[in-house]
Amino acid sequence: MKIGIVGLGLIGGSLGLDLRSQGHEILGVSRQERTCQIAIARGAVDDASLELALLADTDLIFVCTPIAHIPSTIAALIPKISPATVLTDVGSVKASIVNDITPLWQNFVGGHPMAGTAESGIEAALHGLFAGNPYVLTPTDATPKAAISLLESILRPLQVKLHYCRPEDHDRAVAWISHLPVMASASLIAACNSDQAISELAQTLASSGFRDTSRVGGGNPELGVMMAQYNTSEVVRSLRSYRTQLDALLHLIEHENWADLEAFLKATHQTRPNYLKP
Amino acid sequence: MKIGIVGLGLIGGSLGLDLRSQGHEILGVSRQERTCQIAIARGAVDDASLELALLADTDLIFVCTPIAHIPSTIAALIPKISPATVLTDVGSVKASIVNDITPLWQNFVGGHPMAGTAESGIEAALHGLFAGNPYVLTPTDATPKAAISLLESILRPLQVKLHYCRPEDHDRAVAWISHLPVMASASLIAACNSDQAISELAQTLASSGFRDTSRVGGGNPELGVMMAQYNTSEVVRSLRSYRTQLDALLHLIEHENWADLEAFLKATHQTRPNYLKP
Image 1: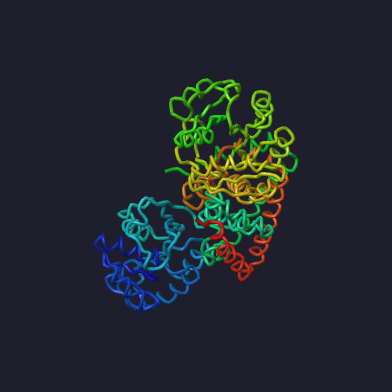
Image 2: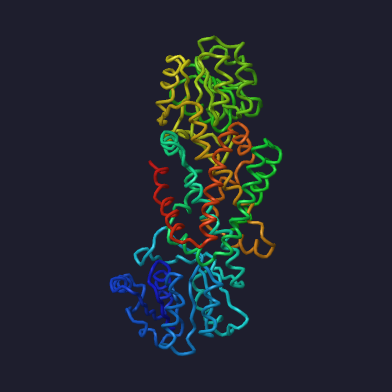
């Protein structure tokens, strides 16, 4: 099949590597000539261009730009492609994108591959990045079944774990397990604001507990802003629920209620494995 | 040297393994006969007993019981040992212990090896557990220099990184980097309390971000209670500071102040590496 990819970063580049090794013809578009050259050299695309016109003749296009550019990219694609072309995106927030695109293009299926690394850019693209990881599709009642089937047929050979849900449910779920952790973790780093001597001692003594809990809060600032910006109401909802739990826990400690604190911590100990299913 | 260890769990057992391999004679005391047998069989001790009297003739004793039992263990040891014996403990909170023990025993040096695994008990004891990790000593102005020197001479060959600070400074620093992360992480797990369908979706989609941020909050509940119970004022202080940061971040998101949110997340991105020094 002839497949287009707009945005040749970690996700777009990795999709290209995997899909080309499945025998598809992959055409890539990037805003940077250098990225096009690297994508060709790495074998992520058969051909690449700065111009969306390269994708005129494709059957399926993955839009892998940052979330902010997905609607404008699709608006620019529309005059150049056939109505039969299936469009999909890889944005990590779905409701706003699906709401924006659905009136513009019938053959659109929202998607979110739940995979990544600490790195970004075409240089970081990896074979097999998606294998074994969830890939969420968020079709609506109006999405043509044939468009969903075509996308599934392309993704299944990458050994992704396909999940289906409403865009709003996706955004609520990822607020809990992806966006809230970033905010909670960033607040942890910001809270360690003691005087100089204690801060230096804390930095010297910090080990795996602090390292793991602070990891996502010390990540890419632009990604954190994007989560809050495109999933505002769900991020706010999850942060308020989090603060309620934190206040309850602080109240237990202030009142030296060790029995209820133990019950609280036993519940979290028992609940966490539900989030770690293989 | 003849060295005693009271409490043959992960820390006591691992100290025994390392110190015996340095040629010391190690005598262990546990409350359970089965633990004594396993400690002998694993080579963590030369001999072991249920009775503290076994340690009558030792030069140095590591008290490796849970924090709650450290003062009572030392009170029970005192009638059985010579005044020259140096006592040390491995409790993860220091001010309350040092304040309790200092009036009872002059040759006492508070200690805290910053090492561990997810496992516990004598079966989990490991050779080399402490190598390369911080080991904090919290002597007071009244602590005899000879007692500190003796403990240092025993610990240095284990290749620990020795640090020295006041017990109160230790407790404030570990509240930030060890106890607060547990409370922040447990609150994260507790906050994911959406309806059944969303919870199941969240559990299915959770990946490394949630896994890392929730790890210490899903750990041993008794350990979490112990941190709050023995370091109450510092844990409360750090939680209040944390809540202030969280409220500031929530306010930025509620008011869609993306520029200041980005500045907040850039600061945490820049600060975190200070806590990850090799």
